[in-house]
Amino acid sequence: MRSSNTIKKRSFRWELPFHLMLIPGVLVTLIYAYGPMFGIVMAFQKFDPVLSFWKSKFVGWKNFRYIFHLPEFNQVMWNTVVISVLKIGFGLLVPLVLAILLNELTKNWFKRIVQTSIFLPFFLSWTVLGGVLLELFMLKGPVNGLLSAFGIEPIMFMGDGSWFRAIIVGSDVWKGMGYNMIIFLAAIVGINANLYEAAEVDGAGKWKQLIHITLPGMMPIIILLTTLSLGNILNAGFDQILILYNPIVYEQGDVIDTFVYRLGIFSQQYAPAAAIGLFKSAISLGLVGISYFLAYRFSNYRIF
Image (cartoon, rainbow, N blue to C red; front, side, top):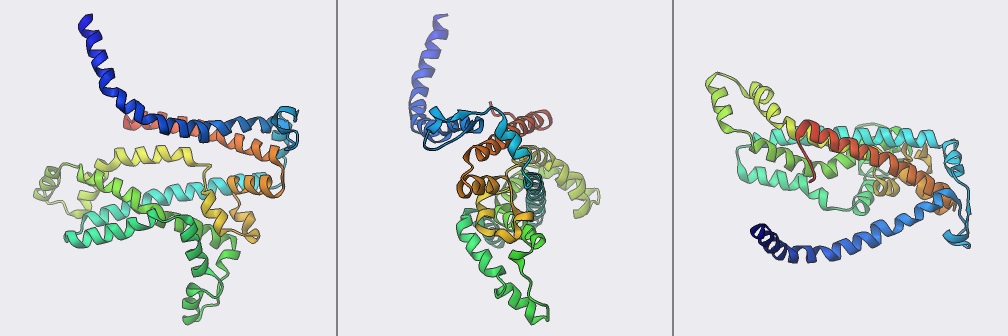
């Protein structure tokens, strides 16, 4: 018993500096992540900034009934799900294809250049990329200039809902594909090289090696990333869409986060905006829980 206590004391003394290092991060999280959660009470009040949280009238579920009957609510939910699913789907498929193609390159110097070039946009903010995209796809921008050179009429990309969604999804995939590509490359490197040698001896070409060795070997990480992405179904990209969209494309481009922003900031309907935010958070919490359960069930992934 004494030896067990001694081991625990030594372990505690050894781990104490690491726990102390966590204190600043824990404090910041408590102040800026958990502290503002007190504002959830607005979702159940007829909130008046003058009266504050303490004196505003409690109205129960009235704000939730109000937002569910808003004419824009169903369209906003649909836009959010469609954009998110497209981002998740192409955000996994494109990096997977790139990782497989990049793994086939034999020149290491060229491979590093391509890998760095693809990964670079991940470090840029949407403030920078948004400005670049607006300039590229404006009516008199370079893209329309190129189309005009081929005799094609200029397209109002940022004023057409269908084109706007394509730009939103495509630019998000382009920005983030480098990150997932690195993960997929790591999964490919982890596959036993002897399997490829045995396949070559048996006469299997590159295509059969891909189907029977590479993809099955990557399947655990593909399942893991897919299941973990389920928690982001209602996160369509607030900062990206806020920078790029305009009233003309609200019908196809407005998502939950931007709708809450306009409802709360511009219309000053703070309580309904808080109700929508709480509704989204509750659904997202459930989706995150389901995604982690599926990740544990199919890929044996666990946080703790």
